[in-house]
Amino acid sequence: MNYLKLSIYTLLLAVILAGCKHHEEARRPISRASGSFMKKSADRNKKLVASEEDVIKKIIKSNPKVKYYATKKGYWFCYDEKSNAETGAPKKGDIAYFNLEIKDITGKIIYSEADLGPQTYYVDKQDIMMGLRDGIKYMKKNEVVTFLFPSHMAYGYHGDNKKIGPNQSLICTVTLRNFVPDPAQAPTSANAVKPSGSTTPTSKPAVAKPAAQTKKDTLNP
Image 1 (tube, helix red, strand yellow):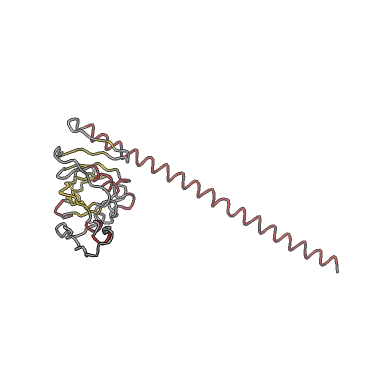
Image 2 (cartoon, rainbow, N blue to C red; image 1 turned 135 degrees about the vertical axis):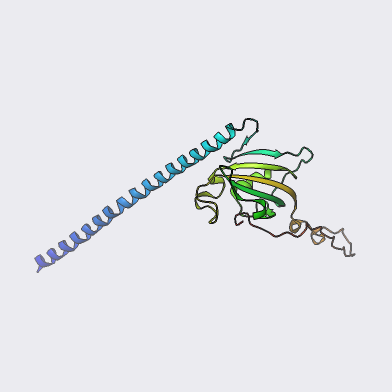
């Protein structure tokens, strides 16, 4: 009887150990495959960025009379119309009103200003093209700027699901018509500190509002 019990226990232990070993061996290739995939993906992205930047640099080199400015975010821009009279630029909390034209990297129009219509952008509070989100803060009122965006600063690997394809570099021309503080952020009399002992109610000052515009997401022209 003891011999039978010992045989059963030995068999069960062998099955458990075999199962653990099989489980460990089955998981290792998945881990190695995952790491390999991530490395290959990162390498592809680096090559893609380098390839797009080479094309953009060739465009810049082919236009020696045009002054292009490189940015820390990895895109370039030039001024079509520069304003020396204006000093301020849009900042977080402002509402920017602009026109936009989008071309592919060869200069073919994808979306014209008429296609997109007037654009309204709540600075740093709306999800728009990453390059425009940063680039518009370089601009002053009434300036016209052309941006050269590699795909990672444009619509990335997914495109816009319409006319802009995956991993597509873009040429965007922006005309900044105006920008104003967001009226919703303006302080009201309710937040003002009343003088000590004062009982006279203060009237709420009128808040100037910009002309009504349709709030449009540049990501969905």
